[in-house]
Every structure is written in structure tokens, then in C-alpha cells.
Image 1: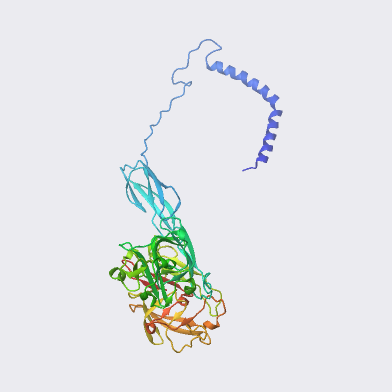
Image 2 (image 1 turned 60 degrees about the vertical axis):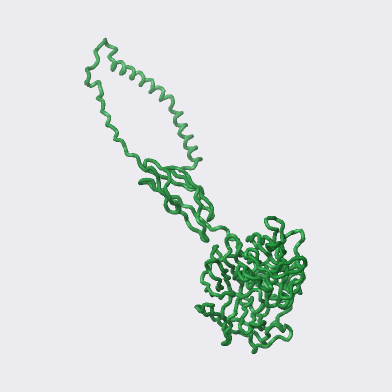
Length: 521
């Protein structure tokens, strides 16, 4: 196609040539007009008297050509379906609109990602399938011999099921010498309201179940008390290897990142004065962990293998050192329905409620930079929490499996982010002179042990390191530390504490009505 400026110049030149020949054209035109007038008169029989017209069919007439009849065409069957959007998020609706013509069919049939009998024209909103990965949804409509399809790209929803786990030397009010403690922030709210308080430095503990708050909650929060059928306030004793917690059981909405567990029973240690002193059966288990200084955290987030912290044992009988009915400062053991027990909040999440994943980057010896971990909610519920190639390890009714270390079988073994070291019995390892609860080999010691599932179907060799706690630099927040086991089952227990999680992605599969608990890594 020519540029506009060249077309304009050529048009101008042509106009000039026409103008210059205008006089010749006028004279020639006058001659042609005169000749044409004579020819017209002769053709009409004028100019010499009245002759008759030429006979029909003579040289003066033109024959008429007959018209060929048009053959009617058969109508073409057609169908057309369209979608209201080219792409949507999984689980969202899309509106399909369709029309058909000349199909001879009284209805149409849907196939592909929808189904059923449809009218010959219309519209319908259909909901795309939930998905953890992208896919194409195809909606096909067949009306007689005509078929049409519409394709919609479906993407999984934005995943918001993770929170960071920080690691430092502890919260305000602690001794600031914490090591290997994973922390998250947890928000508690008065049920069904926006009256909330966020608590930082809550310890992530895969060895317990339920939320326990040690730091002070604002009185204005107004969390309601959990009560027994007779109206008595409920107190609870939480016993751990290293001590106990005693406090009231209150109701709260628990929020962790974008996940919410509504109307949960939680233990609030700071509220213990409202129910009375801890019973002797509770205090018999070591020292109190009911302060930030003693715990090294503002609370404990128990996200282990089970849904409740006591389970059926507390439903069937008033278990010792568990739940208490408290009236007038006096507390007596009581049974507790499952729905009112302090509960693992993950089990109450809307979707990502069947377990968690704890993952950490590799950590070197020597107390370097504290790692940042990721706590992921749900297993196989989103695009980022599939089990992948991880191996499952079945556990027994207590959540334990077997460890074989230096030929010694330890059938009460477990994985526990709430333990800051690896704890097992080995008299050949020297204890520390300063941190006497830990081992202190002269140089980092590489060791091995075997983890065996409770059903004996999986047996895996585990490599680990033990380094001297006393040689770690001041302020170190992480390290490959270990110590001797304690308690009556020390000889049969290998407590795989937080160092086990370094450089691993560990799955904690929670119990359900149809599946048993498991560890996987």
C-alpha cells in the first residue's frame, strides 16, 4: 500500500492534465450530440412520414431468456456454547450460555466437566472442581448432530497455609538463653468477636496437643471459662517430662497465620488464681513451667499426632493429674467430654486439618545463624503440602516407634520439636561441666541409629551429630546438641528433638476416624 504523501502528489498531476484539454473536449462533444439526435429520429420512424413498426420477431426486437428455478437448500444444524470467563480459581463458578438451531433435537446433552440433559438454549452456572494443581475444564454440549465445547483454565486457589518459625534466644521475660526452640505467633480472640490479642514466641511442639498460654492475657479480652455440667470452672494440669503447667481452661478462637480454629478450649496458666492452687498430683511432676522464664516461651502450641490432649481416657474416668472441677478454690478430678478438652487447633481448621509439615534448612555445627523454618498446615490438601516421596512410619497408640541405637532397642521413641536436643541414654558420652543436662564430646561426634516403624515395615538408618553445648558461642540459638534421657522410661526412649528436623521436611499425620497417625520424612 502506498504512503499517503505519494498518492496526493500523483492525484494533483492528473488533475492538471484534464484542465489543459478542456477546450478540445467541448468542441468534440457538440458534434457527437448532433449525430446522436439524427440516429434517434430514424430509429423512431420519424423524419420522412409515418412508417409502421417492425413486425414482432424481426430484427428490431430482442428475445427474452427464461429464468431457471432456484433449488431450495437444507438448513445446517448448529450449536454454540460459551463460558463467562476464560480462567477461574478452582471452586469458583462459571456461567455457561448456549444456543442451538436446526438440529431436530428436542434437548441437548452435556458432557465433559458437566453432565445431564439440557434445553436447546439457555444458561447455567457450574462450579469448577477443587484442585491443588492447574487443569483445563471442558464443557461440551451435543444437540442432535451438532456439538460445541467451551474450555476454561482452572487454577488452584492462592495457598495461605504456612507460617514462619523463628528461632532466637527467647522472649522478653525469659533468661534469653534459649536454644533450639521454634517460635510462632498465635492470636486468640473472644469467640465470635474481633476482641483479640496476639502472643509472640509461642513454642511449636509436635509432642503435645493444644494451646497453652503462659504470658499474661489482657483482662479486656474476656475469654469465657469452660465449665462442667454442674457449672464448676475447669482447671487442667499439663504434665511434661521437664515439669508441669496448671491453669484455667478457657474458650477462644485461635488464629495461626490465615488459619482459624473457632471456639477452642485452651489452657491459660496466668488465670490459675481464679481456680485455686495446683493439686499435689499435678505438682509431683517436676517443677512448674508456668512462667515465661521457666518455659523460655510465652506459650506452647501442641500440634502433635492426636486431636485432644487426653482423649477417651478422660471421657471414661477422672484421670489423675488431668482435668479438675474447681469451686471456691478447691479442685477435684473430673471427667471431660472430648469436645471440651484442650484440643489441637489444627484439627479444627476448615480444610488443612489432617496434619502439619515442619521443615528446616540444614544447620551446621558451631552455633551459626539460627535457621528460619516453615510450618505448613495440611497434608495433601494444597499444591504445597503433598506427601511426595516421603516415607511413612506407623506409630503405636501412644504415638511412638522404635529406635535401635548401638544395639539397644528403644520402643518409646518419638519426634518432638518441643525438645531442644536429642535425648537418649549413652553412658559412654561425656556430660558437660557447665550445662550438665547435655553431652559435651571434645569434638563434634557423628553417630547413627535406626528408626523402625511401629509395624516393623520400615527400617531407616539415621545419621546425626552431637556437639558440645559448652563450646557454642554466647547467644547461639541453634546447635546439634544432645543429652541423657530422664524419667522412668529413659532406657527405652530416644527423644528425637529439634536437631532431627534440621535439613528435613517432616510430616505429622494426625489421627482421624478412618486413618491412623503417622510420621513421615
